[in-house]
Image (cartoon, rainbow, N blue to C red; front, side, top):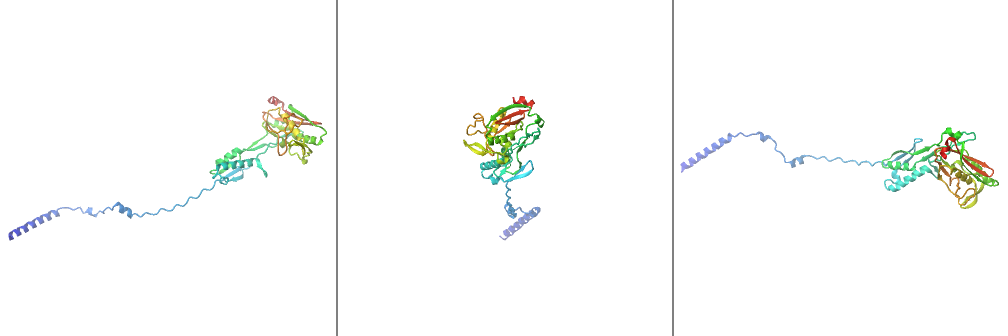
Length: 335
């Protein structure tokens, strides 16, 4: 029995020594042990500190649009307009209406302020045949101004007034020759005894005499004749108002305007303004009259011929004659 235990002990030790010998012959790569272990992605993200984003400053609100309107004839600023004050950002239909009214008042004026529009004051010949200069027709184109304002309403900007200037349409070298040939004439009659009324006819006829109407020019009776008041020498005389004869300063002037109408009606003209009396007047056929009142009704026409003409007035004892004359070289144009 003892021999069996000794033999078992010797066998165990032999096996142990053999195992230890194999273990010692294995080379171990120690470099792998020196590399750091990878951390899980979640841990890496946890270790990164996130910085807070800086607060954004609020963007400043845009300045409201402003439109600056300049007079091109003087390069001066005549008006500064804020579209939003006119309702551009709230009601575009009302805004357009206000801009149209603004343009109208700027062109035609208001009760207390004249507008840009000016009627032409026609040139005349004096008693020596020298030209007395008038002034051109000036128009502010309202529709173009409205269009320019609307285009600039969103962002603002500077715009110019659309002003047009029309000089008289004749060659100054023709002036001495415009009285050469009479191309139209008309005569009306009155009672020589109506001294006050006749004086008014005489004064208004004298104001028109030797007026040059160039090609394209516009004739305005009220502009040429001017105010009919006592300061200008006009007298009280009967005039027609609302189908009744009443006394008024300048009564009888309508006979002058009606005589002018019947003379120029024989020429190529376009009527801009023309009114009839409320009752028959007797000195011209029915429907052939032209009533006027200073500051009110006017008689206006435009010369549509490609040539100028001259208005001559002849005031006599009981009659008034209007002659339309032109240079001999233009006679065929008026035919």
